[in-house]
Image (cartoon, rainbow, N blue to C red):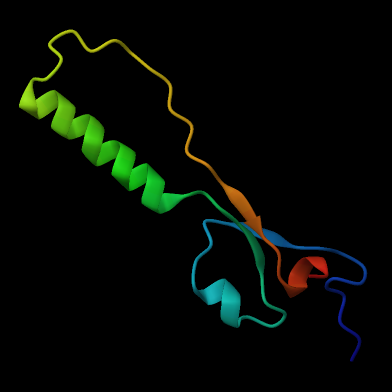
Length: 75
């Protein structure tokens, strides 16, 4: 039986779950930077709780993300 992936189509997931490594073919995915998201969240929460800045201005943070290329996209 001929595989359609990645020959005719390519498949990519999001969130870099462990199961993607072990699927057949292994699933390419986007790693959203969960560790960095958690670290940013904790530091912002501590900043608020500890009262180091009474007038916290709204801000935008953008955690880094990257593609994890595996077999489902020809990697």
